[in-house]
Length: 348
Image (cartoon, rainbow, N blue to C red):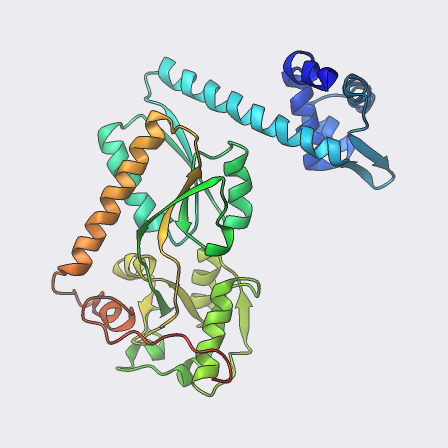
């Protein structure tokens, strides 16, 4: 134990940590060496030195490449965490030296990026225009490990209950229901009332099979005595949704605030169809007990202000414009919308 403590505290250098992370990322000595601008023998020699320090093998070598052992995986996690802290400190100091006002890294789901997060960044920039915000899009499965390693300061997106954990602080900000959308000029966009049967025979862009939303959407077809569409593309990417909506005339499903935003720009049209699926609220996730940097704390404040404003507008809405009136009819829970229908399991 004392030997390992000495290695972690004193013996490991930054270049050692960078090499361990590269080996874990590429799982190949040659590709890691190329990435680090070193020779393969130099990488092999340095890895042998690190393993000698610990007295343990950290990577298994084979003809298929290198894979971390159990001990190696632990050391790689440590390396990633230290490097993330180093990069954050470096960027903050560089920002201060250049006259900027800090930097924050945010992981975001597409349901939060175009409106909630974008408006919060706009508020942040109004107060501190030279603050840098790094935004990395993805889902919880990909972004939470980065949050835990310190590579991200904050997560903004749907608070899926399955990802709740004692080491995470969650804070809901606002509800955001689901709507069905098509390209402008689509035949369904002209219907005064769309039924689920109208969608069953259409090309659709649906979430991947493992996504909880996919199951809930398919339940709606079953609840109306229909089979889900068979002509589908599976993707959670907004760009994919938009591409196949325009290319194939597909129907897609997205968060109401995102749909409203892009409908106002003439990029899509909302269908007059309630999509009564239960969705987690949009909110924040941070590491429990970790103090936020001043810049991240300011961004959180801006996110809360924006969410509070959205809720006030929901409770006291202005008359809808022609382009957004469809959302009033389509979004369950929107002011003026019809009653919310609970989701129904197949066979109910």
